[in-house]
Length: 325
Image 1 (cartoon, rainbow, N blue to C red):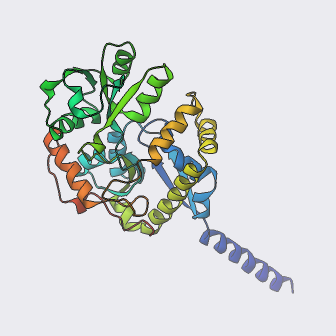
Image 2 (image 1 turned 90 degrees about the horizontal axis):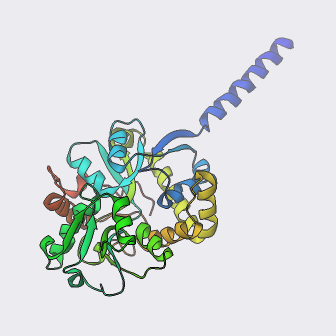
Image 3 (image 1 turned 60 degrees about the vertical axis):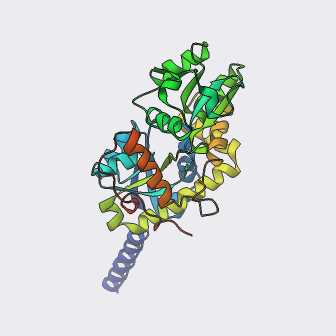
């Protein structure tokens, strides 16, 4: 009897252990594009609200050191999933880094001309203006394309090349008329200083510049397609929750990251994000779905102005196959 009991107890324990293993969450690490900023909020929300857990995932969200570094880390499969600028991902893919973009969430790029006052209403109005730009940044790559697309040339403006912090200080003090950069970041800070600003977003004036999305290592994508599908579905759930509950999402972001910028700044960034989920080529399609035409247009711009070499066909850069309808 004792022997039978021991055998039965062992069988039950083995059964429980097997069940536990069967339902163990898949662990995955995600490398962000940069240190904490509002565009990363949906992933933090998805983790905090248990959306990843519900999808059978244990997700470790790690801060980054720039989208370029993130593409290389993901390409080496140190962290198999990344959140990065899709234009930077395009440059890396063209250079042979083995990654694929699997979702484009912030599609209409926020790179803009942000100008003081209300006199700049169309591209022609920037003629003769003092414009600050960062040549090593993505805004410096896109500015010439914006000018060319609107019948202008770099010589039509007074271009001042400087780092991001320096150009913001320069426009704040009136040394510049406009700066080239992300509107969600610079415009609210200028408005908070009591300044009137006008914005010309490059994406609204003939230049496709896809912004942030999800990239995956190609080997991991091949070996773990279901993990990627579940991650994207849970992330999109986090995105939807964030936009439906912006105030709560902002407070959650501040609590988890310790960020000291005012809640109004974070909410403004989320509002900009929500307004930029689609391009004309993806309007009406599920969030995250990308367009071959957008990728081709962006890559042509990067090839002409951003130093891209080895440009490939659009199918080499992205896939919509892992997004739920």
